[in-house]
Image (cartoon, rainbow, N blue to C red; front, side):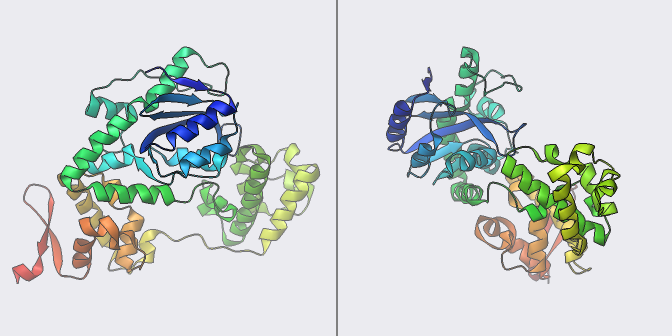
Length: 383
């Protein structure tokens, strides 16, 4: 099906009005963020019962797209996390209803499949590989680029039908819908600047006083990058933050002596801001978040590894992606007895949480099954 190119506001508004009355639509975005802090949307692809459209966000006001996102129509995407971030940035909105084909496929035995592999497996459709380095901001886009972009949504609705039918047959459709809603409502956009220092490699080796400086300077860098819409590395490299944290400079010469700091960082207003951030962080001694195992009683720590192995095997047996079931953090939260533990609520509790609780409370045990695997034994039945 030939995709319609939408590059004027009137056509864009008409498209939104038409698709918003549909039961569902397929959606994808192309974006770049190599030179910016926030993702810059370069193309929006949409498919519905009436056709396929490629929207040029460089030529229209994308804020109007929120009307479609906030409609009752179901948005079908593949690997939607980054798309949600893009939509929040350019439209200040995310879909009111969402179905992620990659996420849902995890409930029928796939492990984070690419769109091309999923289409090939489920629909026997083989899409041409595009150029990973395509500059989607360039205009005009070639016909080949347009066709490749359209292929990202061309079969999504058919794929949605295929996956939901299998989920329904397995009794897992509601589980997948719950997981999609978790994804839809997950916070998107910039993280708290005060947590930026934790993403710096080797931050964990810093001593207590240096950690306060690192947190303050990293938070300053994050805010400056956001305000200027440039990558954080262009403001100040990670190496410089570690160097500044270790030496806690008070003057420009001391700042210039820090490893990773160039003259352009230390001179003028930039240097003044860095020194001010150092001063603000000098009295702060934040704790490095403890490892997950350290948050459990010593007697329960081995249980995390053992239960992880059991979950992995159970996932293979029941053909469900283990990453959907439980992260290590989820296991720790349940073993620790947290009220908000994800394994204690919703579809996870239905699938595995109750067995885990019985295991931790001593009412069940794990043993080898004689075939190299693990099995859960009800101790009441054994007694």
